[in-house]
Length: 265
Length: 275
Image (cartoon, rainbow over the protein chains, first blue to last red):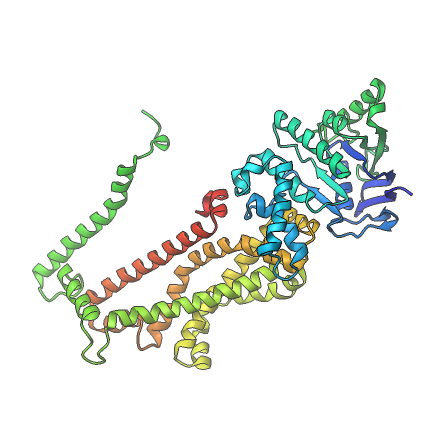
């Protein structure tokens, strides 16, 4: 049995169909990079994995168990922005999940237990290269450092699935390359299953073990909302040859819905 | 020559420009006061500065002949006490209601319409009701302040909670937090500086309600004194009292701002308008 199975998932808002007939299987340790035109439902799909949205039809199962449609500690998330808590320092941000876990009422740790959690948090912070910024607040960090912090914060909880919603979209190319190394390193160390939305096809090829393209197969020009997007390409990244690559480029460059000409949001 | 909008005064110039209107005002007052007193030495409308000093000396540094109290300090103490209790209770209610309304949709659905309705009742219009229900003592004055500013504070707090990006609440859940933990560690600490900011804004209204309540039914307090001596046209008491109230309001505002800067540095650094 596969780790994650997606059975005939649809998502509709009123008579707007966003996603239709999504069927897929994901194995533990897969890194799935998701690309697609703006507004094609990539983020909606990620939200369903996260649990903030429920499918209109069909279901998603993890190890045969149907997913609970509420965010929980099984799935970690890094958003493009607002992922860290502005009122906590780097250390406090990473420590927070330990405090939630060990102290249901006060959500704070003291003395010995705090020391132990602190060591663990420090290790995680060192792993993402923020060791020198332990007592800084997020606003004192650059965008790249904030995203590192968000990743450390998510990973200390040891989620089985890590969801990344364009986590590096706002970063400079140089910093982006650093972040790629970081993600790959952590992926190897923690055996994570990762879903990552990106607008950067190169990033998708580089980071993913599989690349999914979301696109509308059918389009009714009279009723643009009548048909939803599906996974039109799903391939192991190593096997993408020139012609498949071209097709993907085409699918992204010429989205069938005419009012969305560009792939950047 | 740079455009006017690009010319910045240097620090000393800014300081001088800032004090200039005050100095002009004082000079203007002195001129007008002199002119009137020359015509009629018993004129009460614009007393000389000497009369202010006399009045304050009499009220603040000599025990009252009738009660043996230092009237000025007694008034200040009573007023500040009422203000502190009234504003304190309001802030506490606002924090509890605002945060729970903001975080729990079921509570919000139940309470929000009523809070909106209450906030539209003009507090001064129900002052007689308060006097009837709570008597003429301390309670009705404190309740007036509370009724006057609590709805504003509650609605503001609720709004601030709703402004916390949903990403943060989702993130907290993925870190294993339950509702209570989210309130305690994510929402509360983030709205505290915003509460201080709203309290600072509502202090003007709080003073208004305090002085109104004291003017109508009281036996001491800054507002009471002003309205009492009005009968004798005692501008030599009224004007220093008004200045004193203004100074107190300024100091309270300043202290709250400093408290916020000291306790919540992250808030002021990320929101330029928050400082």
